[in-house]
Image (cartoon, rainbow, N blue to C red; front, side):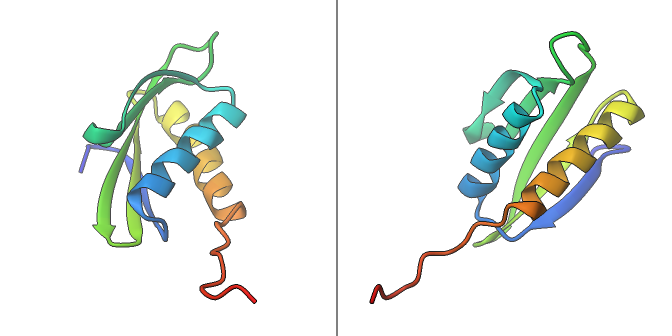
Length: 102
């Protein structure tokens, strides 16, 4: 684990967690400057005006669970981004399609 990071587990497979995180960051108007789905990372600035860097790291903890870790040299940026991101991921759960359509 990264020193002083904030992490939380979500009931999403990795691809879903990654794409939903990108969607939430765009909603928050964060400035995404690096993303690499193969390296389990998204790097952002808090906004276009606030260039405090924040790293978002992903770890598959199961078939349908992913740990999302938020790290930043700024505890304020880390806490603000993680709070907004984690609440966005919890508030908009993925509704699974019914296995058998009527």
